Length: 405
Image (cartoon, rainbow, N blue to C red; front, top):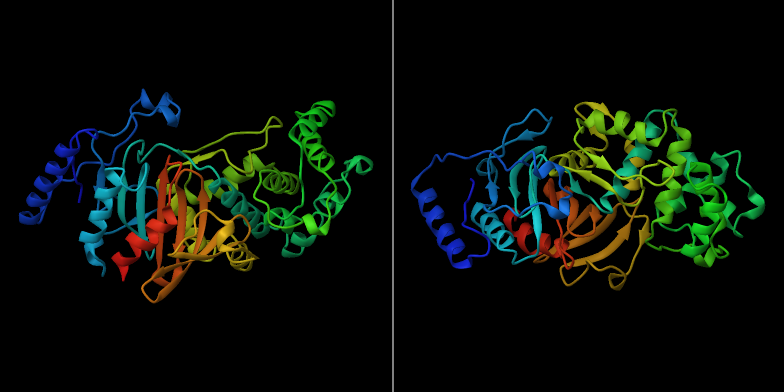
């Protein structure tokens, strides 16, 4: 059900509008639901940060059927608390919980709730921040499915995939960094920016080979003690270099043709490095519905519409716990979110509700970009936003779990 409110800055009018709408809903079983908000021609030319806020939030318990490969359904056909989720949507729309642009919920394989706020539009790609890393992880898995990589390759040194690197100028220990370590943020690279920039320029920074050479030659000495979890952009850059090397068409075309197009993802953007490679750590932009597709792919053990796009064994490893972390190490933990861990650019954590504990797998990006899978409840939650102090995992634990318990 779509709920309307007046202009965002008129808080009293918003509340009155909600009350009015809820009253109408209570006496009308059938309501006219307009289409989800879409970008205008003028808005489509703007960077996301300059999009005007929606004057009216879009809150729909019967999402639109589109020709995008996503199955949609009616929230009222499942066992869940509609009023509780509607209350959450009200809190999101008034920015009580932060500056969110969308909130979508999938039950099983069906989209049952879809909402847009502020800069959210159903058809406009939203900056993904570090969700990009999780997409890169899926692309590595797709390369495995097509025979360009194997599970055994995960334990091979990064340099073993390349023939023309100058090992004489490598930082000590760089030659031992494996693909597994790069995928788990445990490469041990510690790079001074000015040194990397200088070396990159010296060796001709526009080539992919030059960029990789600079990465491997600009670090302080890499020792086993340094090869612990360190969240940084260098490790995804290494993984993107490997992907680009092993696939015949290069990483950019491969991600588009072998992964995105298979999922029906055509409306996207991805920023590039100076060498032309997609940035591995951030830079992708997807619609919220296309984020749903990534969640469905991960939740279904790598299958999409009957085709095994990613090997089940790789996905089971990549999206589950590999590196154990302390609660105090990670910003999204708290009294209701415990035991964080990391896989191949995918996060894990337990979310608590009463005496129950639910394991989650998630792709996470700064500002509120989340694809959260709760297998035990057969749920996927997708959010986008532009909130510096976002607490999405806390919101899921405190506001969304009660809806489905």
